[in-house]
Amino acid sequence: MGGCSSAVSPEDPNAQQNAKTNWCVCCGSRQDSTAALLSKKEQDLDCARPTIEEAKKWPTSFETVLKHKFGLQLFQDFLRSQYGEENLSFWLAVEDYKKSDESTRAEKARLIYEDYVSTLSPTEISLDAKVRAEIDKSMSNPDKDTFKCAQDHIFTLMYHDCFPRFIKSKHYKQLLKKH
Image 1 (tube, rainbow, N blue to C red):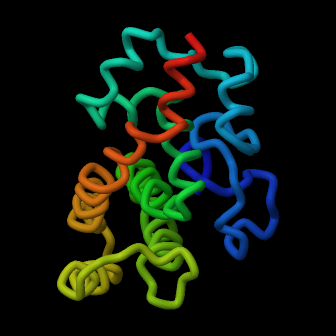
Image 2: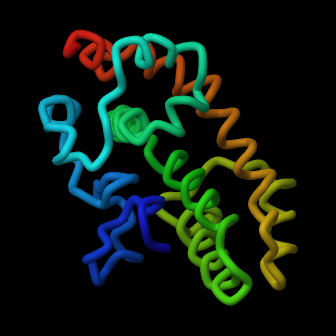
């Protein structure tokens, strides 16, 4: 997988073996900490910092955070600090996968499966047996909806568990203070 939806280094020749490399989900640069993220200039981030009005609306809309490049980076940094980045990485990988054409779909499906669905993966996401079985069944001929149930499950998990903690976190509070 390439582009901004991957959490691995685009230059890393061992990207598949090193899926935990901390790279920005939107611009491909190394992401070290919230403090570093908040202190960077917008032109260095390749995405605009939200206005205070935008940031104050984030607690009411998880989708808005995911659609805002800076919000996505900040949420990713929070998840990294909680050792839960694989859920967001999976969700983003599936977003990228859904946009892929038929010529690359099978390979991308295989990579997503190996990185997040396989019980042998170090970045395995938590899925129930029924969802995992549906994915296993569709891997012989993956379509754009192969990971839909799993992605919906992970979105719900992030929305109900991770997102409320993010809104209460130092990551979000520091953003509000920086304005």
